[in-house]
Image (cartoon, rainbow, N blue to C red; front, side, top):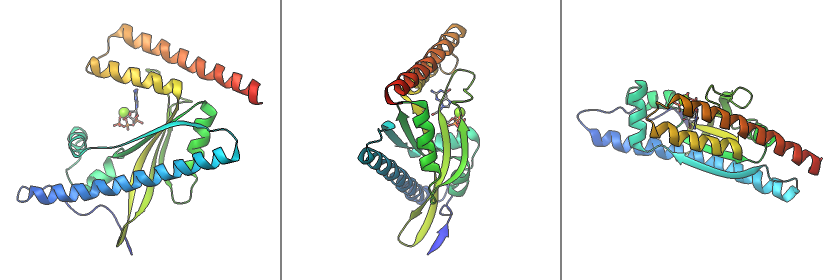
Length: 216
Ligand code: GTP
Ligand code: MG
């Protein structure tokens, strides 16, 4: 078995359908990577439920970039339409979002996933300890995971976003506002969002305190 990087394909004017096929296969490998991470999350959920130590994971969602949105992102960041370049430069082809009840759970889940021996951490960004200027909070990790194919091993990247329900609520509202105003949000709404982010964080802090009182 050989370890390969992305299949060496680039968009060629002579045969665009060959590139389409290669892109389909390329994306399938990311879907497998996503499946592996989702299995890991399900194992953690079931094992922790069995142990009766409480479930740190509220819900999980995942998405694979469509060929159209991959092309659009490549064009936006000036990445050549060539699979090796895309694999190196676009790290959110496969994305998983894990929503937890409490901040401590988010860190625990991040730790439980990123310390597994077949998971290689590329980057971790802690926007919980250091929120973005708009108030966005979340834990982000770009991880690499091997996918075992019939005749090769492919390593793919998966973007993990781990956050509390309060952070998730804020991020989904902010995302809608951001797109409604075509990324040019009026100053008063920016201020309002920032205030709402502070309230969301206070809710997280107070809920953690209640949890501590009840469960010790
Ligand atoms: P991209 O923004 O995806 O090109 O990557 P990046 O290198 O800027 O990474 P970053 O960690 O900043 O963001 C990755 C992803 O996190 C984004 O694609 C969003 O899904 C989410 N995200 C980051 N910042 C915000 C934010 O301010 N608001 C919301 N709603 N989501 C955000
Ligand atoms: Mg960004």
